[in-house]
Length: 424
Ligand SMILES: Cc1cc2nc3c(=O)[nH]c(=O)nc-3n(C[C@H](O)[C@H](O)[C@H](O)COP(=O)(O)OP(=O)(O)OC[C@H]3O[C@@H](n4cnc5c(N)ncnc54)[C@H](O)[C@@H]3O)c2cc1C
Image (cartoon, rainbow, N blue to C red; front, top):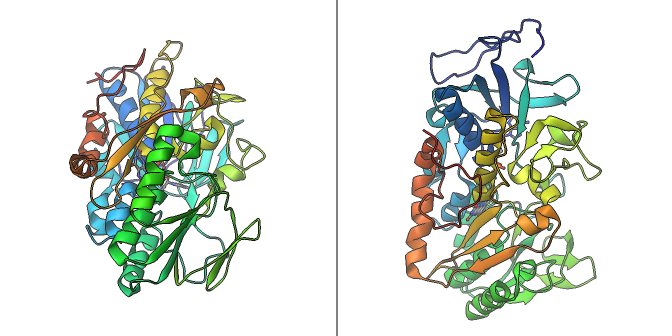
């Protein structure tokens, strides 16, 4: 908390209109500035958690920076693809969802300087006492886009283009579905996407995946259930298939297997965000290293890394529910330095909705994160009721972001030592 030179910036602070941020210590001598990068599931939940602590008397100044100014609920993109909802249902201005104690700043982060404890970007330069990096994954093709373009609901553009494509597909047409790489958001979602496309279009759908069997890393039970789900929907599964090339009418694996198609719904590659990949926080793969259970960077204890951006280092799935649990843990830890908040809840819940009855996969990634074993996963049996639960998950998401129990309060999750869900 050394004295800092003055800096002025403008943002859309929720309370009090335009925001002036200075590098001077913001208030009383002990007030610490926590800068949160990214207002997705992880960043917004962390900022609001910190805001709750500030509201309860913790001496914190909380600044939340996002380039889009919107909080987006990405699981809703599948509903957009199948024409069940419009994009507006899944977006809200960040300033509407941030608690009053959180200052919201719209801007692109371009540089992280952990040695100087500062970040910079379109908003200028901002010093911090603690940094929360929650920039997610950079999802998209980079000049290597399939000739048919992005049609998969891992981006909003993909969902909208995929919706148009679905209307053109005739029964019997050949459709290929699969991920471009192994790290992608909500891994189960590509399986029910294939099943639902098969049901809706009555096309010949083939699912390609690097895993040898559906959901192979998540245990025998979930794998068998997803294998049955694909068979029931008439989807052909091609395991051990890592996509090496996509041309106008065929997908080729790194092993030389070829699948012809009329339409391809391929999950785009997930890259580390450029601001991280070019920073001292990046590891050799471009993704940052993350210590477990602290969720901080091994060389910089004042940098917490949560959400999708932390998933490769923690060997966890990319899931908004997991991101929110990590955010809650991070907020408690940062607000009370030196406290022992226990281990973070490493649970993720991903819905699978092949079109009639839905189910969800619950995985605890403590084992992979701690290096002690595989994830522990349970797949709920398919029920029509879970389709409604999925809709409830979407409907409640924005409200629960404000209240601090983002989308998870209604699930009977196992209690974790140190988990704090009762902050006011
Ligand atoms: C089809 C689909 C289905 C899914 N289903 C589920 C599910 O059932 N359950 C579940 O838990 N999860 C699900 N997910 C995954 C979930 O959406 C993500 O895991 C979650 O959004 C990750 O949150 P995050 O905060 O880490 O990243 P994001 O939500 O991606 O947020 C990152 C934020 O950082 C901002 N940002 C990035 N770079 C910069 C920069 N340089 N400067 C400023 N701001 C920047 C972005 O604008 C964004 O707001 C699904 C995803 C998809 C696509």
